[in-house]
Length: 563
View (cartoon, rainbow, N blue to C red):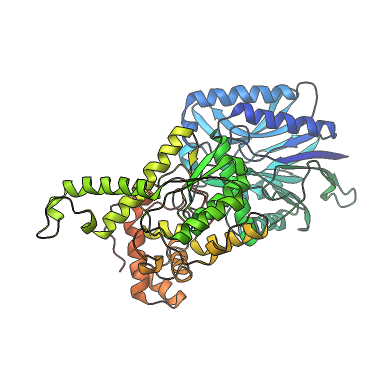
């Protein structure tokens, strides 16, 4: 005897039941044609994950149940069973559930026990906890441990005690750099404890600020690898669960990929960049934008965002606008144009004189409203004598107004281009360069931006060499460079990684990085002060352990002084 199982890592959209049903039906028909007896999907596939506060709406419950009835109907003619992860509702309680569907009806159900309430997860807000239930599928005993449930030993141990011959773990595990290694370590520990095969089945695709990387895999009961699905691609596999007649030991055999694509497991900058591309593509397309626009400055950040957008959407869907000020160098203008030409995107140029008029008009208005701040002996508007930071911010905000105007007029979504290093220390202007609907680099440190630029260039999306090697500058004042107010980015980024990603103390970071305590303290102070800006920033893709947004929730009003 044996049981043929089909497993699919797909890309659902939260709340789009019609789309998600379509993916389920297509996978089901493919599995049926291949002779599968049961089909399995990743966590909350029917609803999309994470549904967040949609779970609090009874209308969402009704829509989820209506979609569930349609999935049940797929099995009415005696086709394969389905193990369907979706929203479970019992009375007034909601659960992260998996239903065993067969012959047009629900045969059994199990609910997630361990509800994560850290990082990007708020499941204690939305779900009740359940206890593990064993499924009997065509004579075989299948244990289902939903995502977080395999990070703790008790659920898999209980399912094994109940007689499980295999553990299937539907997951919605967001991408983080190097997280795949951790997942395999956790799954391997569960296999060592239970001695039975385990299938880890993960989502693919972007959902707001998180992106799922797929990389589903399976271990045999002896701990050896059985199969792996590719990163960043929708994919499927069929395999057979068999039992050794002498030892009674279950094992996975007859493994066949049922979707096209090369099984790949990229690492390092390639892995991160592919995640940014997929996250950007899904954010744009799932929110029904046809095109994007961005300000192209001749600097590294905007060039990389343009390159990512071209890879995600195609050059014909990307538009760049260069808005030079009196401080913008000829080099920047030439590099921006070269970048647009290399990428093959539409490139528009705002006349420098027109922009100067806008800046001076805004400056006169501000100066006229604040006569008390005029230098002694000066009467009337004093544009050229305004405090430098205020004038720099007016430049940035004037650009933001123009770019948002293009966005409003054309329907293109405005991409903002600030990186994590800048966002950490507040080196960004509210309603200026922070304007936009999405920021692909929000969780990418500056040193990584340069690495991404090089990777894009070596893989056919050319970022001009002059952009990669020039010193970073916002060009908001004459001769300005980022190092005027910040340490060099290799130094800054290692400090920020300790302070932000690992929550180290100032002294710990100073010791670990061999930097002066005063420097680390000044960076920490800047990071705390800038919290109010980050609360108003566009969403962006999480790639590190702690991104700004769902991961890191510091108070804006904060009297704690570590220093």
